[in-house]
Image (tube, rainbow, N blue to C red):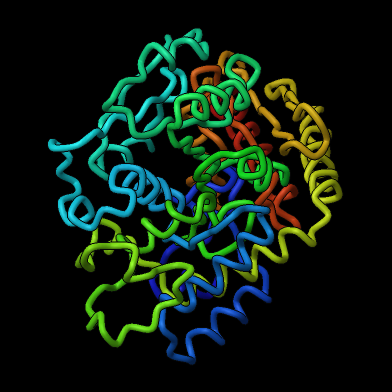
Length: 400
């Protein structure tokens, strides 16, 4: 809160979830301590990345791993690695790929605003299937000599399983990338894709892991992780005297050293690297079931305390299993009784003191969604108080 004051920026109640635009998540004290410690020392970034990668790979049960400046950075770098492999000339040409294969396959119903990362790296997006359906044979029909990767998102797995897409990728010797940026609310998602054989998996470090918001992880095949490192790290050095760890970067891999690759602008600092590794260790020590049980308690408390207001209705949405995700609470305002639309409702919540930011995806139904992950002690009481205030004000206005 004190960090916001010098800039006259209001602190908010984050009932939205782990979205970057409201700060992602809050880092534990141990993570902040590791960042402060890292800030007090100089290190060789390539040595730090190699050491951090070994620890992350151990925790995530992967062959190799690398720290990036967010999950979007991880995805750009992953596509870049598939486009170039260990070809220094190709690295120097990115994002120009007119002279080489550059197609990345993605299911139509997996398309999203973040897959622009494919094109940012120099790839071409090829959609398969339809908005309603996608089958393994749709991927097979789209594969040709221009295909460099398949991108999979863990959405609608009941309609397109990871195992089926992995089988296609393996049969055709095509790298399978997994964008699991927002899937760390289920701890199994940090290990299951790599363990099953995905070639590269991207995670956000600043959401449910509670690391620095500007951090991310990519884990998977060692040669692809090495291609990422070559295109990401500072290459302003004399090759004859470089001391990079050979398991991450070996001058013998390439014909020459590429200079400041496409990933250079996505650099990760020593502070983010230290903070992320610390947060990841803590993540595996947390009691995720208890965390979600407490989240459910907060939502139940909000629903109960609003149950006497006829202008408000609530609906709890539960994950498939207690540890697979967080519950959410939909709060619907009766627009006929209050004269307020969903837009009016959320504007009033944001404009109040404290400013409350819930989910916006049900505004057309005159509803907001409360995600409990980032609710701090007492936030549920403040949310109830503000909603009651909004409703009582609407009663007064309509009675005047």
